[in-house]
Amino acid sequence: MLTRRHFLATSAAFATQLFGSPKESAKPSADLEKLGAVALREAKKYKATYADVRIVRLRDQRIALRLSPERGTGKTLAVPNVSEDSSFGFGVRVIVDGAWGFASSPVVTPEEIAAITKEAVIIARANASIQSRPIQLAPVAAYHDRWVTPHDKDPFDVPVAEKLELLQRVTGQVKKNPKVFSGAASLSFRSEDKYFASTEGSSIQQYILQIYGNVDANAVDRKNNISRTRSYVPTQASAGWEYVPEMNLEENAQRVREEVVEHLTAPPVTPGKKDLLLMPNHLMLTIHESVAHPTELDRALGYEANYAGTSYITPDKIGTRIASEHCTFVGDRTALRGLGTCGYDDDGVKTSSFTIIDKGIFRNYQTTREQAHLVGDKQSHGCCQADSWATVPFQRMPNVSLRPGPDDTTLESLIAGIDDGVLIDGRGSYSIDQQRYNIQFGGDAFWEIKGGKKGNMISRVSYQGRTPDFWKACDGTAGPAYWRQYGTTGDAKGEPTQINSISHGCSPTRFRQINVILTD
Image (tube, rainbow, N blue to C red; front, side, top):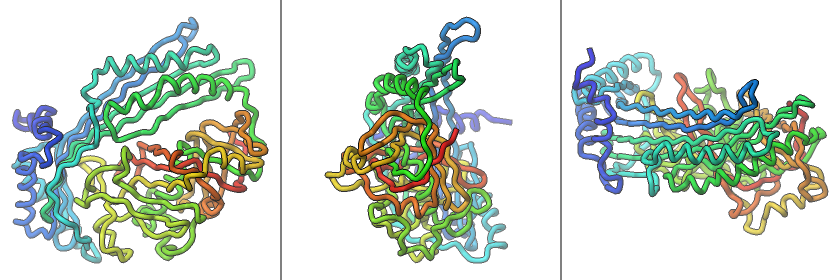
């Protein structure tokens, strides 16, 4: 039976009480520290050589509005959708006899924390009986800190009515052309209150905010039985409500309306070898799938083979060329407004920036404390994360970005260097094999480039290639003024599956003689 005390321990009110101290405080909540100390004390009692506890509150809110015609009447229907979810609980990890144990609960009381810690110890001892070698953790400093996503106004403090009013104006802009069948827009907000304490001496509280948005248009040519779409997805960001005006949703709704109608009459691409100019809101997905995932160490070592595959970038590739000299990639959990940005990872490691590929030469994998020694590293790169209090922290990618080119390299100069090519904007369908070796990517919109000039919109474009050949074909990327971050919010990994949100930054980038195909 659920007692009143257990109800209060899982309630939003209790979570607010625990995490509700002033965000400007530089120290973790004393109430959280008392709860965390219970787990650490119990773990030591049971002879754990390491233990950590995470107490987490998650909140998700999605506001959406769709305008579409009512069947049979021609009237336009406005269909709003508002959803909000939250969860609150804790998880405990221990190392006993050289093996991990983990357990979690949604009931946040000292008694429950003590019981769950004992359960984690029992699981660790069971795991130790079948583990071939003991867990080895890279050293980490002890931190006593509080980190908050930089923001002026918490989006959860803004009334839903104000958010819906904005979306009404946006979708209204999309539907102004009668050829636009439907228009939709949405805003999503996510917050993570998180407390971490470990037997290494750390006590860390964080408050992480994320904002996403999009505008979609669908146009229909009934006479020719053609339907086309166009989307605007602004940079997803770790930020406050003050970022929403920067998304320019209304202004871009007008552009999307015009371009989706143009897309209806856009001729199909002529397939063949062509130069490509890939915009940041498109190239981010190619970076995600063909650079960020293959440089996850657990994938390279085969630990993800059963679910998400392996990697062609095996450890023997360290120090070898896998891309052109124009390609320097960094892993960065400190990037301003990046979705993967935070102060500390779920190992208690202070986040940082590190080089993955240096001018085409592969240098470093993404690692956690547990993985670092496997490739001879003395420190973790701070890539440990769980998607909730109920899940086990493991290696997840940071923000992975392509460094911009020289200041004097512009979008126009890249276009001017293309005789026969395609400019690709936005995300589309894609396919990639288990080793991240063979790729195919579409996009959201395409323009022909002829004789160094951007021409009219074309359609039905995809490109194919082998990953190392594709990145070796890169011969230029625009300068810092053009660099943008775009995020992906549904990155799945692990069994049971966990979901991650990260950003990938780049400038418009040119690739030579890539195989372009005609596709639906």
